[in-house]
Length: 428
Image (cartoon, rainbow, N blue to C red; front, side, top):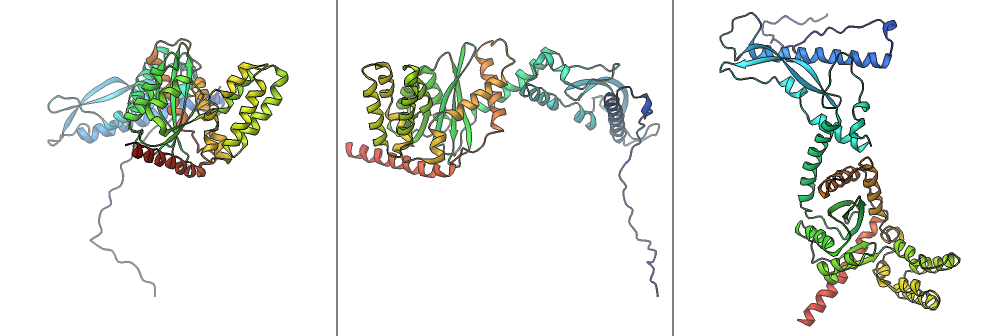
């Protein structure tokens, strides 16, 4: 026997969602002279109708149905006005319904407020610059609108103003953010020249091998004042000067001096071996390059820093008579080229930290990001562009190869710190 559900007088009413009808013209396929542009125009027309229907629905929610008396209504219709919304990196005009409260004040329509936001416009400008599009060519990079439709905020000056405002805000936030509790046992420092300006950049690597740009300072050269200013800022923002860490630099004397002054004996400096290699070969004739390269390569591949130092000293002695400049270059900063070996670091991590390649790759990205700038109008502009380029570059940062050996480096640095503390206690 089949059972049937009985009708009940207690069924609850279900509130169906509000719907709206939108008329979308669908021209015949044969009328499409340019299928890509025609479809884009169709989407714009449909989008405008949808937005218009949404705004009218908002107005009805506030004012009640048209032509009906409603003593409880919160506001009244007040015609339409010309306004603008954001669409695909530009502003386009629309007719916005107006609503006024009983007190005569303008009431905002939620759908219009959403469509009129300038955040997507600002992000579009930043993304365009990051993709290498100049402000002069910004308008050409956008999909074309129908001929009868106006557009705004696409001129060179408009794009430039938005970019300056966004990057200034970004720079201020980025340069004042505390470094927090993350420990950066490795800090790489290098400079990049942009026009007549030099920007000194500090790149930190934490215990998990993750990279983060810690700070920057603008100047004209890598002089001691700029270097000290950068290091002082890092300390003020949370880089502990009482903890041993490894600094990887290209060998600038002013930078070495500033690190020694700010961090004392707890700073272990690793000179970039690639820079040192170039400096030495620059003092030698071509016929000696291969033999000297072989000695340098062998010495820097040894696991024992003492043996490596003897090899390099013998090389300097062999060059002394005929090439004193090359001999002096070998001896200059010799100990600092062997710091990682002295700390017992080898393998893939050693290959990554023996040079400043990691930060030089960042500098190359900054140069590419700012390639469309033809004239630098002061240091503030330089810092804004560099900051924006760094924020973009950090999205692609990867862990350094051999990062699992960083714990071994941290233990070696802690041993250095304990030794220094014991020495200080004996002296006291």
